[in-house]
Length: 365
Picture 1 (cartoon, rainbow, N blue to C red):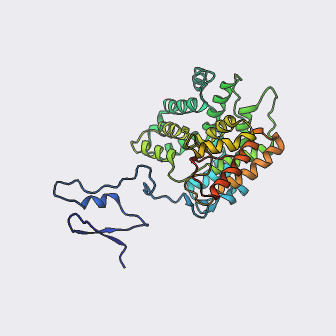
Picture 2 (cartoon, rainbow, N blue to C red):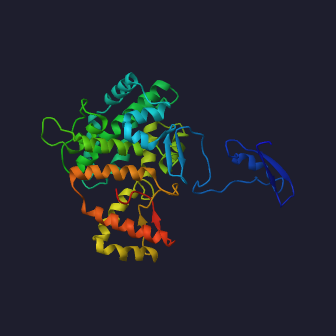
Picture 3 (cartoon, rainbow, N blue to C red):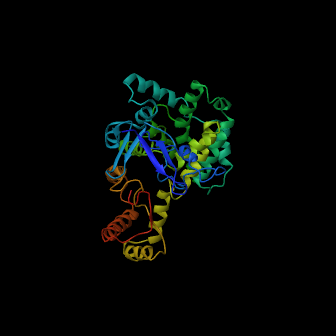
């Protein structure tokens, strides 16, 4: 049996054979279906990309019905348990986990690019102290293209590789400096002797001590979070970066656009929206009334799973386990009790088949 789709156009009575490859048909193949000679032809309409493939990728596999997430064939649970973020980044880029020597070289390649130009520091200082860190971050990432004009050589493999190293290395530094600026503390120089996540913690929280002492629990928790967010198919920010990059612009400009997409409360900003929601609720006793308002259409319940997962988000289980270990070190945030109660009541309503106006993110952790 041929892998084709037979389409009958009831307007004209004509039949068309459309090839099927990898479970998909090409949208351009529908242009031949016309009602008249001057008709443009059929187009597909899918404004939310709910059933549209924009590329072929072997990086991430998701089975939303079964709650499965894999990078390059490796279950996310296995990577979160046994790998580091830099190992996972290497896996995503090259298709296989690195050997010991490959990981050592990869780590050196990243580490040597962690520092940022002094003018970038001054650029960050030009923002208001209360500027949103993501706004600062996307501006600085976009401006980075002015510091690395070689990034425009996008067809040069060695140049592309160097920009990858720079972006992975400098993103934590820029993020940490945006945070330090917001709290009025001096910037902390990257420490080559620390791990990728340990160095980020140092740049965020180091005070006057000669050497920042990294708590291994917090270091591992941050590494796990980086692993869980390393890739997630053609999501909003990834699609934005691919679309911008298709113009052959430098990767820093494309990354700035992707950052802007990630900023939104229906994407990466959902986590911030969850915290704002919990602060708004204020107390565990207020949770039932809040859920009632959401059911009445007077608000939105932020943080109840990604829409692609129909059973459960496998990342949430890992985050819960990791968060429990973190709370042993840092103590329990009072907002957590509100989150847990909100989760309990909302899931109770879900079992009753009550429709809640919700959005994704991680409610409890």
